[in-house]
Image 1 (cartoon, rainbow, N blue to C red):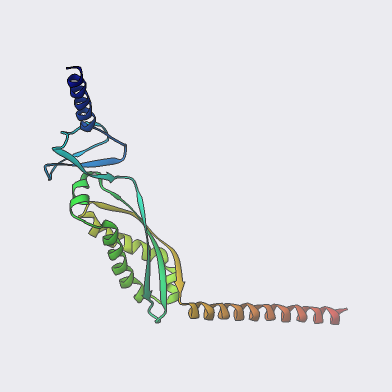
Image 2: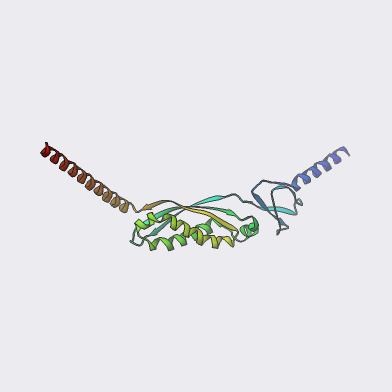
Length: 203
């Protein structure tokens, strides 16, 4: 009898523990009952029916970041790789859509980024890509925000953190910059020589 009571108490404690959910701040948990959506549980101490209800997903509501490298071609036929960082989060009121509508949200966001960057960059020359990178990032953010919003994701910010042209192009750009610096140095040296000559004549 003692063992039976002990067994009963152990089962009762186990069931109580299985029914308790402690949900951290900035999370929402998707609860399913017998395989079907039942509710979204918010932060705090919550209860569920053991074995009947399960936690299908623990959705993170904090801002997250996705980094994507996009290779594309500019208006002047230069291939560049843009490193893009997208900051996004799940919309509090659309946790259901965020979990059930998209199987791979990272992949979907990356696909939209590829499409938008490859639509914007070919309109610009290489110099304009460097000069207008903030405008490109803003256009990408605005365009993918409307697409991802229906799936429960808010695009907070989009940043172009680096632009890497083809190695041959970078080498050519370095040569051009070096030649310009050499030309400026020669000009300054010639100006200095003129001043020295004038001063020597005046003396």
